Image (cartoon, rainbow, N blue to C red; front, side, top):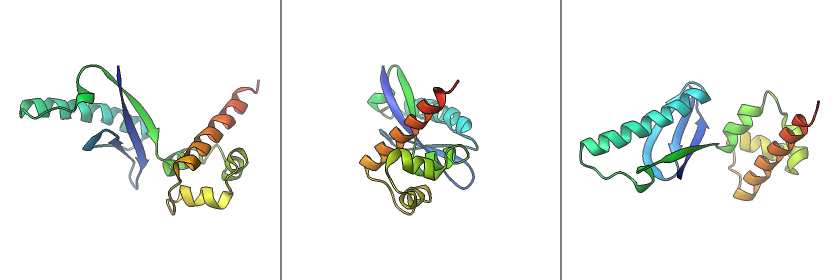
Length: 133
């Protein structure tokens, strides 16, 4: 089964979705769940419309596929901000609070290595929380 990476990005009025391997196809939802649903609907509409107008469908959309939803860094930092402080994330990642703040406000975009540190730090915090009984 093929996997399509869907990027979720917070905007002023909700969450936008774009597809890593499918250019110029976008979706939107007021909430994360709405955006995820719209991503599926948009792909179905794209495939059906392409077939209707005899346009080629990207290989990744032929046959069975699954969607892998990923937040961009500023969106995930916003999404967890009510649960995890930037100080806690700084401690878990080794990235200073000021830099995390820059990522959260889109002032700067993290390099891939920094992105991985943030994701791994969030996973580590989650593991620690799950270990509490």
